[in-house]
Image (cartoon, rainbow over all chains, first blue to last red; front, side, top):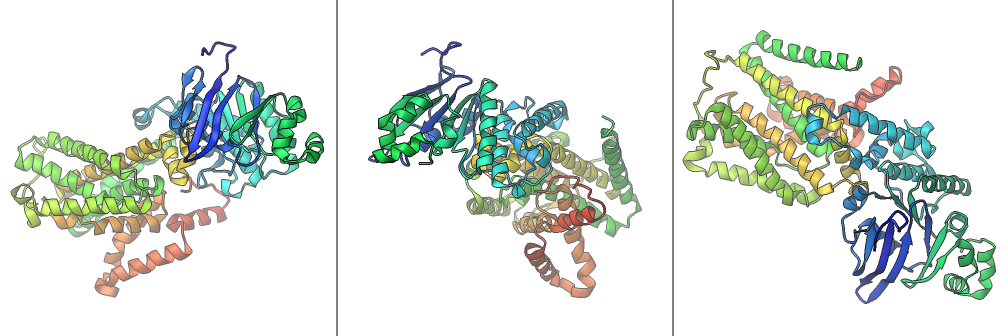
Amino acid sequence: MSAGPNGPLLAARGLTKRFGGLVAVDALDFELSPGEILGLIGPNGAGKTTTFNMIAGAFAPTSGEIRFAGERIEGQPPHEIARRGIMRTFQHNMPFASLSITDNVLVGAHTKFRGGLGAVLVGAARRDEAENRRRAEEMISFVGLGDQIRTPVTTLSFGQGRLLEVARALAGEPKVMLFDEPAAGLTPSECERLSGIIRGIAERGIAVLLIEHDMRFLLPLAHRVVVLNFGKKIADGTPEKIRDDPAVVGAYLGEPTAAGRLVAGGRP
Amino acid sequence: MLGRMPQALSWVAAAAALSVIPYLLTSYHLDVYRLLLLWIALALGYNFLFGVAGQIAFSHFAFYGVGAYGVVILWSKLGVPLPLAAAGAVAICAALAFVVAVPATRLEGFYLALATLAFGQLFIVMITEGGDLTGAAAGIQRYALPPIFGHKLTAADYALVIVALLLCTFAILWRLDRSWFGRACRAVRDNSTSAAAMGVDVARIKIAAFTLTSTLAGAAGVVYAFLGNGIAPTTFDVNFSFQLLFMIIVGGLGRHLGAILGTILLYLAPFVLEPYVGHHHPLVYGLLMLGVILFQREGLMGILDAVRRRLGGVRPVEQAP
């Protein structure tokens, strides 16, 4: 598979993960292009988080491959995945509790520092540091935490903590952003704000992969949706197509009468 | 750029002050002063390892000993010229620290503590059982620093060597702490999963922090070797690593200034308390530790921060741990 200018940036082929006798993800194929927002949905236990973890490098697939810009990356450790330009947020915010907001975001830029330890020791890394600090502050403003920049991270609200997760990941100048249930625990107004930020990220040409439970959040936001059930892909298409797909509605809700709620945009 | 001038000036002022003091002290106080500076150098490195990088290691005094024994054995037993012996001892420390770090830093918390404790004990056993090479329990005694450019160093002159070591140690740790490396160390300490997701190679950062700080302890050991022209196993006992731990906790974990203040307080406490409590000063240590852990987790630096805030909302000069 080639990764030409129009080819996919991130692609999974036959991605499979077995835990003992359980097939958590079964021969999954999907593709993600620059600037695209792809939603990955499915009921609990469908294999969403397992898929996410394989891409982020938490564990290796049993079989199948993941290609990033044409190169195989499956089974590589998380720091290597990040170094290549695939950054993630955590569902349960995981900030560096004792670092300032700016320093949290600067850790996200870890792979962008050019000088090694030698440069640090002879004092030649100041410019690098200042440049990255400026970009980190830009990211903090971009997610709307500019006014909180001096606040200790431990006193941020849950929603602000989620925004910090986003700013920190963006500081790594990713080509792909992975969001693990970004709307979980957010208020409706925070969800709206986050949707705007995610659109802004995609408009910068970054490919976005979202794992999400909340249909009301995901369907208006995603360009394309992949639906998983029992580890298998059961649908792949635009949100409109997915919304009307009887297989999806059946799998997701288990009963046809509930379909009306999904179409109406109700929370599953 | 303008902002950097006062910082450079304060370094020069500190160097000048620390260098003048030895010539104003009586020989007894000079001994106290020289050892205090060495303790501060050790505490600064240990604070980076334990407080900043979050590695619960107790091998610091063993590496101090490797530096001291290394330089003396290379120079007085194997006839290596002194500058080469000093560099060689530091290199041995770096290599040994790396070899210990690769397996040890895979361990977390309690297990790293045990492994490094075992290493510290092993070092004591080896130098005690080392026969002629290490001088066994009596250590190696009665060698003397040769004159340098025809000048025989006095005890006060040698204090300048210690000042230079201390300032170099501080400058190295200061720069490391204010760079991507220091941030990565703190990030790994706070949440290693999160740090890895940000592209931090956790194992590499841990190994680098352990190796660097252990090598600095080794350099301090090289300097220590010519302080009293004698070295013995008792100086490098694992107990002293716990004393370092007390010093940095009382000062405020992860804070350079805290390590300095904690060391000054705990090192000088026995001298000040001796007339009142005799040899019971460990009791005072214990109570102080208990007090800090129960009531003032951020140590002396926490008190200092609170005072600063009260005096007009000045932000702390260095980031909290």
